[in-house]
Image 1 (cartoon, rainbow, N blue to C red):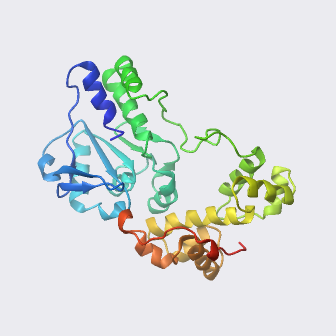
Image 2: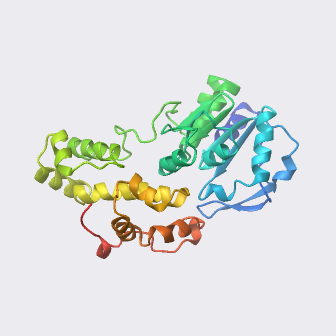
Image 3: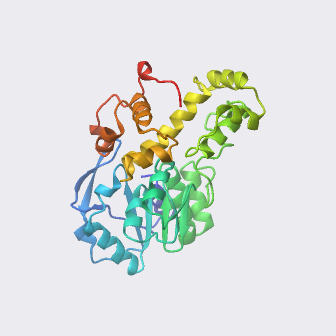
Length: 319
């Protein structure tokens, strides 16, 4: 909806129908989003022989479950016929499966960046909010979908109407290509964390596969370990050691649930040399073992087992 609304606004503000759109899925009928809302869509057969100017693919959890031969065939054919093809959120996986991202830059929601890079080594994965590559594009989703739409709209209707659409939708600043998804200098509620905590976290995030000792991080940040621990407890309510372990586990979970990478390799990619230690820490954080989560994590979000959060009594110390 965030992607479509700028085009709706363009029609309304121009007083004429610049754009029309049709929503389809492979079988048609009710298509349920991950927030539970169902939308009535047409079967893809209804547009099989058409060549739209723009084809936008969107998906959510487990995109590989929807990358059927029939869907991939239609996407490839429309691309060959000259349609611009874009992918929103995890649809980047589908476009990559269709071969449209080979040798290209692409983006996906930061939660799935590692998985996209592991599964498709011929794709240059970036952390931009969206990537436009002449005839194909990708977008990380969420509110960035509106930025992506406004960027495309500008080429179609010009600056004046696009600017009016952005104002009409209260989109006060349009993020362009090259804008990073997680700009360290922009926090929705302001930069409340001390600079040394933010710097320590940056170092941790840059060394997930090969963790570096906390004392070494302290030396790089120029702070004592005791002081860093105190700042972490005040700011993020946990110790530097546990925070570092948790962000490594978060990375591992993306690889476990979104790729076919062997679990031992997923553990190594997150800096866990011991498979036993990895499984124990993983279960403490996510409430289930990696092998169980590989199955459970591919179940549509609204049907997953709960609770899916870390239980305080299961927290383990160490790595």
